Image: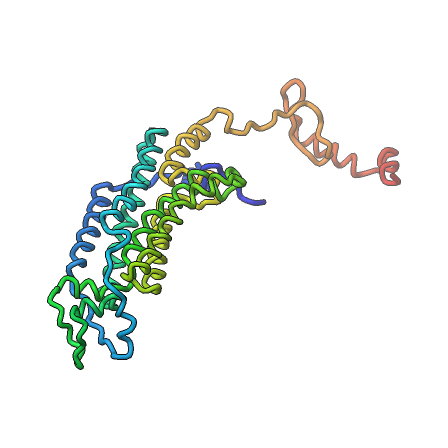
Length: 337
């Protein structure tokens, strides 16, 4: 026999008294969670001002860094409103519709965790690798004159430091960690990947739009010569991986029937249901009341007779020996049958 499954999830764990354990909802330590996210933000900002590794550039590879210096097609003043504002707007609209404060809290915790982790990971790799940007030549040699030692003659220290932080692309990683999380959020809310929401083309388009926007932001970083294609590819992978990892910390798989609800919300709803089931008066199985009909087997003993008394065991033994002693006509017929 297979173990029974429960709608609220989890197995039928038993306590020492034999009762089923109620699923316990996880307790969020909000002060600690807030401190973690503030710490990640502070580390990210501090890494922004760290000098990167100075990688040696060879003469034969200078052509990789001779692209012209141009303004960003998606500057930071546009990137942050998109990455932060669009998901925040969707979270707010869903909260105004559902008035579910607990679900809003889980969404914000998952989203901010992804942003903080992405900032630290991306900047750490940038500093460790120190790959020059496609326009680094003009940052290093503003007048276009190259010396034999390839020592930079540019005086803009900030531009030189930023010019050695090409790998991976920060715009790409932040675009995919923010808008990618929004896509996971919409896929769960719209039940796009389970039996409740399949076959709805409008839902597919709605959930895919954030990923498409993130892809266009990443591509723009190669068009304005601020990143190589390898930088954009790796940055996008970092962002999409961290967004999905942080989403799954608070939400179930997309194939789950209740994928639109966070873990905490599901377990909170499950606990009262399990409690009422455990204390229900109909839960205990009542043993069937025996009637006065004699048992079908002659070897069976005590049974309830119509007047409520019990047959004595010695009389049962006598009857059993009589039946097993001399074969009767009924036994003979049964044997031949």
